Length: 413
Image 1 (cartoon, rainbow, N blue to C red):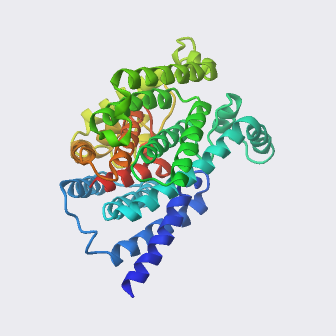
Image 2 (cartoon, rainbow, N blue to C red; image 1 turned 180 degrees about the vertical axis):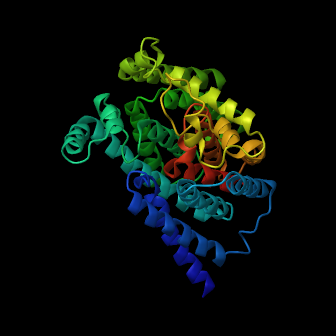
Image 3 (cartoon, rainbow, N blue to C red; image 1 turned 60 degrees about the vertical axis):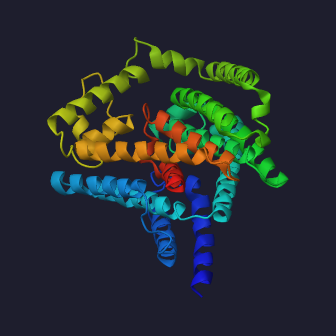
């Protein structure tokens, strides 16, 4: 009986996981609240039904627990607001998916990846549609119903963001799903249907990433491609076929692909690149603005080194630290700086510990020549591209993307 209940809860959990990238809790507060409740309730019941398999059993598990305790401690000592409580509520599914993923057996892991790629393919199709047809319709709708300055700015620059709240956050998602698809594509014993789904998803993710015109997204993606090539060449066994190309041919192919990709990205983002590095208009210069955010973060850390300013209170404190010419922001645009600023050195230490333990676990795992080796390389690179992107951006604080990063951490736990 318990096995049947567990199987049913797993299927329902897959439905909620499939819907995760389609629902922005910031764009649709009411829908997001109730969806998040389901994302807590269903996987929570599933974990209870498999409680023997879901017990913490690695240093990575305890590192995640320590990070969560650091967040709670900063809220207790530094106080909290209704918004920070809501942010904590939105963060809980990330912890649950971490423990859910850490208990998965290979057959369920494959089911999970198929669901992720299927959802990514649908969103990729929508992103292409949005760029060529939907942006004009969206702009017209906003003018008539609910004007939004930020959204109108994205639309004027013809930057696609699909179901996400911004192009940069969407870029973080598609870069991750690209490598998840690559991992499935080079895996052993995949059916033709699965390889077709992987190939379609990869192409759509690459196209969507270009259409976001996200400079940080493209640069982090390019860096992760080299990590993928390195792992594929040195860890995959000859029967995968990838090693037969030889290092020179493989490297040459990747350089050519990245060169073409960079030219296309530069052509699409020409105006945005000029604005981002222009000294004449510092308000639109994302490089200068990030410098302000990072300096303010360092100043917050110096003033409250032990417990920070409080979980998700960066935006409330930033006004006291920012220069007059700096834009307002609720985010540091660097995950390590913001965690240190909000939760102090304990939070920074615990998050750094989680990150280091992930790398150790992942690198040990991808060396193992098994049926999942190719997939594990793809998942490792997906997690890497997320971290690299969050050195200059903020998708860590948006469940539509960070949910999948915590999921990958759980898989390697």
